[in-house]
Amino acid sequence: MEDLKVNDVDETANEHRHTERPLLPRESPSSTKPAFITSAPGKVIVYGEHAVVYGKAAMAAAISLRSYLLVSTFSEPQRTTTLKFPDIGLEHSWRMDDLPWSAFAHPSKKKHYYDLVDKLDAELVKAMQPSLSVISPKASSADREIHQAAGSAFLYIFLSLGSKDFPSCIYTLRSTIPIGAGLGSSASICACLSSAILLQLRALSNPHPGQPLDEAEMQIKRINQWAFVGEMCIHGNPSGIDNTVATGGKAVVFRRSDSKLPPTVAPIRNFPVLPLLLVNTRQSRSTATEVAKVAALRKVHPAITEPILEAMDKITETAYNLVSSLAFDSKDDSSVQALGDMMRINHGLLVALGVSHPKLERIRELVESLSLGWTKLTGAGGGGSAIALLNSSASPSKLQILQERLDDEGFERYETTLGGDGVGVLWPAVSLKGPEGEGGDEIDPETFLNAQGAEAIEKLVGVRIDAFGNNEGWKFWSNSGPHINKEGAQEPIDV
Image (cartoon, rainbow, N blue to C red; front, side, top):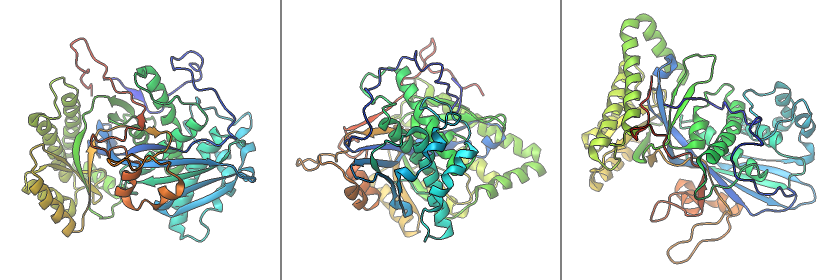
């Protein structure tokens, strides 16, 4: 299996010799451009949570819940840049001349789009503080902290890559991903910001049919490394997994053998798209608390706990080898059941570690009592969310019964898919044409903001809303196209 370090990208040496197609000619950023939208998915941990803390492998995959960033430029005498994120109640404008351009442009600090940034510059973080301290002055301290974290991710990327000559812009964010639920919402947003600003710089070539694999991979790495910068602004020391899934989509297997080093990540380029039911228990939980539970159990009962963690490692290995096999067919019941069995066993092991919750067990009971699929908790546990891989024979009537029971018991459910596309762009930003010819209109910030709820956002701009599950205007940077061995199958995972 191909391993790479998260964000281990050195484009400096390759800047003049890599095989990308020539970028579009650079134009003056002062001219008004058509509005465009970038989008990136959330993620779930499919196998191996908690075991990954102890150097074991885990698997994460993209889900079809996504974030969307509308970028609109306009002319005005006094140039400003505005960040609007109504889902968290954030709206703030900065005068371009008031931003700390000189600090970020200093020869000792200036970064180019192809530079690797693996840590934040403390002096630049300090230089941003006056611009961050004025965000949401009347909000509660908790909301201000969230707003300023989002603002710091935006400003660090914007000031590192952008220019004082940028035109006035409004960056409007909408998300269909539950925020704070361990589903990678912040990484999705950072991937949107990174790709949007890189597109404004013309540092990316638009995705196109027949795009060479090495070119697409270079584009994805570039977006990913700057999305990781945004994640560092929000989380301090992120693993890099969430932004890697948000940019590349599909799925990855990852392992952190040394806590002082980034995890190794292997993309699963041919991971199948599978139907998934995501259920939020609405039960608050603390990741630190659940991790501490496992640590305490391991300390008291190492001879019992270690085999459980090893078994989870083998589950991830088995699942990887299943989806990598040429014999795997996502439309074949036996193939899907094999993955489902791994989910069921993995959940049982997590229960044994003490990180489940009665609400998670209730969700599992409801799904399995109707024989609709296989259920496990995802993430830290102790509440949070559960995922259910649905079998192809699930009847609509039984699904309706399940939905009604989940709604009646106060759970929040999302019908989604596993293993979809990563970061993409809709350029220009126009709504999808309907069957009667309606739509096809430019999407402006007001229209975007007026879309109420996830369904309305998807209907306006979503990537899976026509009869074939796509808005044909969307284009994705894709590194799909599996690496194959001599026998024609992907190399099995070496764990």
